[in-house]
Length: 231
Image (cartoon, rainbow, N blue to C red; front, side, top):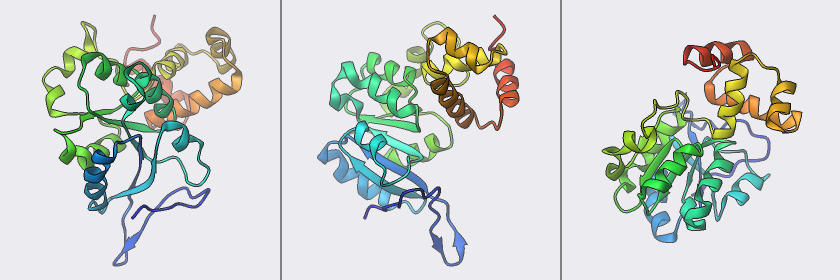
């Protein structure tokens, strides 16, 4: 059974035997019926995972006011077509952590998903049993890939360059963090990126959440320690 969260609820902590169990909230987006029939029971058997949504596309999951944005979205972005897959992931990754679960392991699609901000990529048919573990890893900010991708993952992502130190950030969020690390203010960043100040403010807040920092100074130290903002 799907757990339904009322508007404005900031956390979901069911109690069992007097102890508090914090659950990872998950939304399923665009999964094919055959995939759902396997994935949903596996997730429901996990006491530390709660399915809070099961929708057709990312517009539904982000546009709904009936429940809060989940901790993790498990999405098949390729269902919208390979050309749109990266855009679907980027929209979702701007709001929450993303685990891709799809039927293709094409290099370009895998690379595009991580470039857009996904933290995990599993392949249907071979990685079904890995989905609950993948959800936990992604929820904690880690990276997970399927069996058929693992051996070539480094080559796919690095492409001759050192890996980006914060893979959980989208390309647009990385642009913002680079400028924060360089000591630039939000108005300056807005001008450089030709975006509204409110958009930059929202993006900065998202970056802080994804990095696990409370304020700008922490973000600057973290980013500079990783080599950003020195150019």
